[in-house]
Length: 497
Ligand code: LFR
Image 1 (cartoon, rainbow, N blue to C red):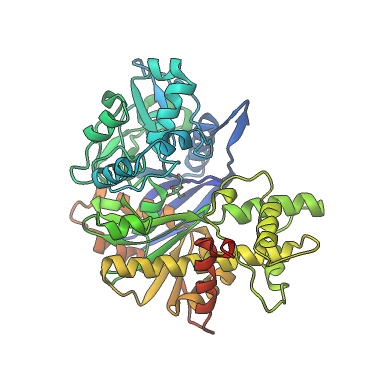
Image 2 (cartoon, rainbow, N blue to C red; image 1 turned 30 degrees about the vertical axis):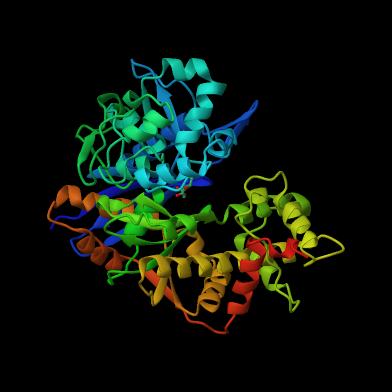
């Protein structure tokens, strides 16, 4: 077959990447064309995303590729979940998308009774979490009533980019499920949630299917980037987690994954959601994955903590440092006692100073005293991540009644050799790190369905397996005692004297 040139855009919280995939019928060879830093921007009281800059940079990269002589066969867009912008009747964007680290959603979630929470979970499969779009939307109604009043459409971040590229208003399903406004059974907008939370149901668009065409590039964009042929924009699993899970090169039907980036998503793939009490109690959530699969997962703190620590450390030592330098800091920790923190404690969600907050926690829990030490803080984050992974993988086994032999780690965090090894030690399982751009790989692989509608998820995973580089880690030493310590910490047992 003629080689297909497929473009995957993966826009993350800390950077966005454009990846070119060449598919020859057997495997996809990827090349990262560009990587540009991203961050939320604080203006006044709120944190925003600069969506126009992201769109503009993407077009510039397209133009560059065209100039280099690439003939692009299709494009797919992925970003993080939950964030959105509102549009008026004429299609004008009414606000810059707000970032989920604005805390005003919290007020609304705290008003929910236990029954409300359970009902919301039963209907949507999604755990009530302060970052879910539904609570931010409720917050906007109060904080920005004029914008909400004028709003006629809601587009999630990837939908916004799809709209800017094609002119079509459209809600992609995996991303939409992160709103907690989708009925998990019908996969349509939840009448129940709209009614309960008093949200205009009309805000939502047609919910698409993976592998179908959203539209072709608008004429003025074609002109701007210098092409005279139509470029299809394909409906891919736009939620980065869903795309990354599609790129897990597992051939077994049941597998555990960790999608490691700014967040850590620890889970497994299912055909149907599990809405049991056990799942609810374990704080697990049923998101929509690729091609209408379900990704049952725990949304936990991830590399965000260490990204913040790196920036703070750079300010302290007054120079830029590499990720290797940060790993070396962790390795320089030689004490016998491993410091642990409850990484999902709300105090680490968005502290002014992550390093200091962790140090205070270590002092309060009598794991540290004296002068602040960067290596202790870094080691605490890495070890605690591995412990929290072990607990969640165990919860996953319990609720699904399946046992997983291996854990696949995908996403940028898969490069972290320290956490990979610690995870193998804490879980007693083989860890398979999939090196490369997993979200972009899932994005590109999903687009194959547009060209060959006969492909199923298994076929796509086979192609992925032919295409990715993997590295295995086996258990070196049993550190399950650390997992027990972590459990006690996260259950705040250290406070009970
Ligand atoms: C991961 C992710 C998570 C989502 C969080 C915030 O990048 O998409 O799945 O809960 O970001 O959107």
